[in-house]
Length: 446
Image (tube, rainbow, N blue to C red; front, side):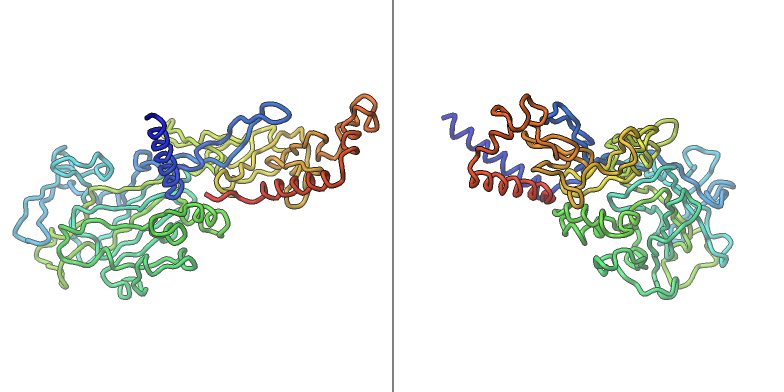
């Protein structure tokens, strides 16, 4: 009775494995190297690797500008947007129970009552109520999921999400949000569903998260990361191999999802009507209960972990690299120019390890495209040729029998044995070697 059970378990396991392969997760490339046995003994096989995605809000620093825009100094009472006579929302910076500092945008969600940051009200109307909320990591990170901002107030009628790649020195827009894109930003309204593979990098203005008076049930504003991934990986992200390949080969695509800082620019609060009630300006303000940013440390595919030490995130670099992003070769490992790892070929990628200076100025010992290993040898990580049994040397160019007693002409030499082999057998061996070698050059499918 055990055999049918074993067969059933094997079939179930095969089904699970097939499902896992068909719907791969972002956890791929989590191993930087592994030990393998070769003809020359135990050696390292290097692979592209990256840290797991995580909640990046645990590691950020938040700044709100102007500094005095947070409510509570002086204390203030607010009215509800949908009911101007409901005025029981107090804010007092000196009272812990009534204060709404910026840190409450990132505290544990699920508390009751909900905690949130809140701005002062629109007391200086018609002067614009402008607020900049800046999230800084002091580290380059790669986004892996939607950015989600949850408002406790009505969602802004005008807002911009911006990104920086140089630690806040320069900024560029990620997405515009408005009740009327043409009026606010002189842009046609679009949604992420209007984008294609060719227009993915376009900056759009969307009205999807700004319209609607019943704001109690529509609190979130999104920057859709996964919908953009789906343009390459399919609607269920089932073809991550395609996405990884595009990230490797499409210019500026990886940078599009890479940031050091985010900035939320709040330009006009929710008013809930066509006209602002100037007799009750305490109805208009911004309040944010949560911001979600999911991503991973950018380590240029040279690390599979990232540590938070002394208020700073740093990659734990492999492949003889160093730096916060593993962006340069370690000292004495500059035998060739530093290069980021590559997702290709799927599924292991290419490590592009830094090599010791002692190897000399040659950047590649072997190259499967231009400088092939000879006599059936296989190029490993561009560092050395793995030779067949009958040959040796840097490029497998030397018959191994040359170092044997009696040389290659002796009766006990590998060359003598080779010469006695029928021609048809030699041709078959040569053909098989060629097919194996060519198969090793093709990237494996995920």
